[in-house]
Amino acid sequence: MRNIVGIKRGYNKVFKELEGTRFYPIVGRCTGIPEILRGKPEEMISDAKKYKMIGAAGISLFAYRYVSSAEELMNKVIP
Picture: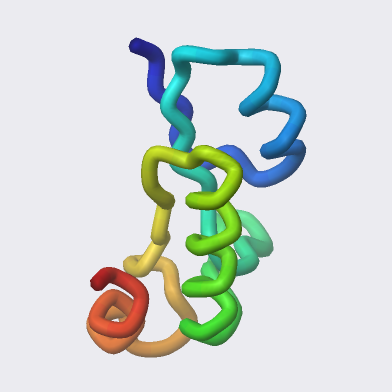
């Protein structure tokens, strides 16, 4: 079993082409170098639900790079 963590674009294409691979896509918007996580927790929850529907095994949540409270973000996004 292969794992791909942190994919940002092309989820549907990748899921279909690489069966047997578990994907953990990034939720929210990562921008800049180094990357900073932006977006509202509600948007990240919506992203996570969308990715679950198309077959993601989980998500990548860059909470340590969040522009606001990482702890608050994790409490809202992680059930």
